[in-house]
Length: 271
Image (cartoon, rainbow, N blue to C red; front, side, top):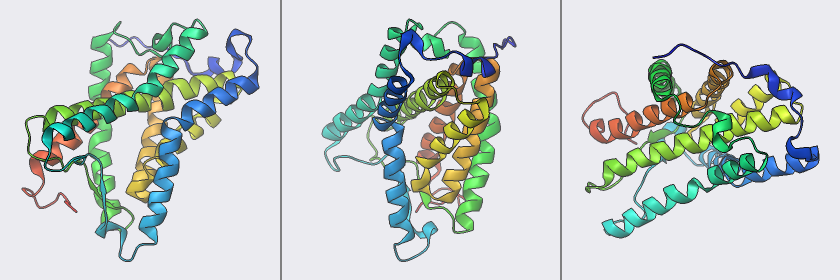
């Protein structure tokens, strides 16, 4: 694993709007991108959490289902819906790539999402995933035991041949969407709009936590902390690719691990 790093942190606030665009235009663009992606998810998560709070019974007695069947009893139709959902969720990433190409920034390469340094990206991704994955699981179990979190069910897909490929694809989609939008794109745009590094870190972290609020307080706090760490790592290495790798590894282990262990070990809540 290479150790070379490329700090990006504090240069962003001084860049100014790209291509002569007015700040108001850049601000509108950012809000639209967020509204089409994780911003909409944040509003949905808030509504879902409100519903969970006002529902009789404790949070831990309710379940948050992440990957479930879209057409029970019809596996081929279910597969079509699963692939459709994964593909359409990535459309905002294509929009961001287009917007970055428009400003002649080199597309997603400007965010460090490319194939130039696969060893560095995967190596640091494994390190970050190992550091965050275990602590995240402990936080979830603790928050659920305290009644501050729903029971998270990472998957409830039928036992069909495409189950694990779809879970892996879903994990990759989550990683690419979130890190491109919430980490690379948002920090770049907030810097160009004149936000301070600390304000941008807080905005990115709170946004990441907010669209996980459907899981409960533990999901919100855990993902907010993870978001802050991801911002610091990104600013240190100058690439989102290692964070995409880390996020994908964490989700793959969570999804596939649940599928393999649910009902077989006593410490894993199954809802």
